[in-house]
Image (cartoon, rainbow over all chains, first blue to last red; front, side):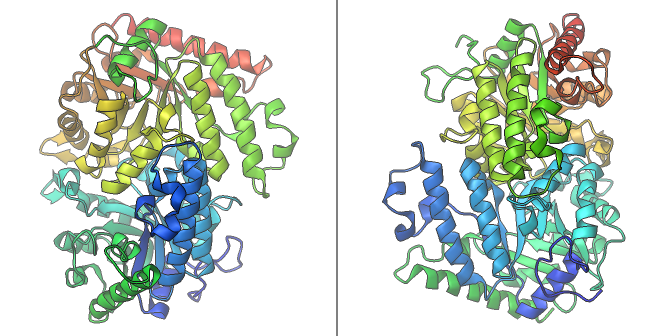
Length: 320
Length: 320
């Protein structure tokens, strides 16, 4: 199967490329491993988009619809601005869920816009449940039901605490519909070590989790040699990335924590495979709100920030 | 502060009871520790509710609205039928998320119905994220925004893999708005042991997680002596429940796995505190679809199943 450059083949295409192949091809084509995280906060929107009706703050009835509408307008323009520089967007489900039902329609529309701009869509929902509930989340977030986000997403983040039962229900969509998964292995937050680095037989817990991810996803690698069940590994933990990489030598890494959370591009070298393959790096607030404090045209500031992040990351990626 | 019997005081009430006090009082008042899990599957609805328009199966445009409407009608009648026998309902977010935006409005309406029938609402969403994303989920699911589920929920399930950062953002709502949390400690599924029972210094991981939950929630106990940051502990693991209880002697336990997943009431003794306090037990499919295979009036079958589960559990709870 030749890796397709079409970012999101429909589920019933005769030939559906493996997610890892699609992501790998898109990185090569775009010369970018930048993922822009979409964490919309209505209070931080540019004043001309926020509008007077949101200035009074959160609360009154009808606020959710007004806020979700403003967020949709904002993100449509952001996606246009960053599309030349990013390989994917990562909408963060919690930021849309805040607006209730209208937030979910906003999320669906945002995924549709990104899909139309040929950006891959990595839905960051960090779901973790079992059995028929996992089936339900899979149908909701990676499925093929019209009017849901499922047909518009390419990959989903998952939490491994419940074991294989919480990953396996998604694997059919990985195999048959070209979808990808990113399992939380070592996250970027300060308290990540509290559970994830507990000592299990001389090794931190996250190494065991990485080993389980490898077992759960065996046999799914694409023709690129890369695997569609990836790992979330925080940019703030480059030493730990080496350990995860040794357990998951062919998995795609989704790397949060670059930019606003403090990690610089130079620290990202251990996340990549030789040739700069196998990892995408997320920047959210440092791109989305690049206009803050600012003077200039807000959209130009967002585009500039995405371009600079892309260049910054490429300088490292191309020398791996 | 006298424990209120009102199940869901508004956030700005002068006196907001601790969630543990509210749940403890409701168990005593109702003489029931039964939680009915709401896992709606449109294919399993009674034919007269499913209707002809859903018979063709999932897929065509407009299906989500028709399915969510049928699910809403079903659950409204179910909630009326089980209200005398249950202390709470546990809507399972994934089963509503499948219907996209209309599913979230259906979930909100279902929470409103349960709230109106004076049932506590434990939203089973198993969210786990950090920082501003955790704030977003808290606002979405336990917040006070009109038109969202937040004002209608009493408690939320959370995943601990990301550590304190993924629990702390919710504690302000626990303290100030009488909300509760149930953190996944030892789940009921077959692969739970794969991660949760890894050996950490001679003890299974879940014991360490229980200890962290105790640390994260220190100082929040109510006047009942019980704590509002509880633990999910599967009914299929009674031996493990003893270990969790020793780390969390005052926490509320939410116990899934009774009924359809195989555990009988007798096995539940280790989950309760003396006097039969400190635990609620969930039954989902064994109540919700009690009419399957049927003959009788479907709603009478659902009510009967709830009554029998309540009686079955009370026989154990009253002798603890």
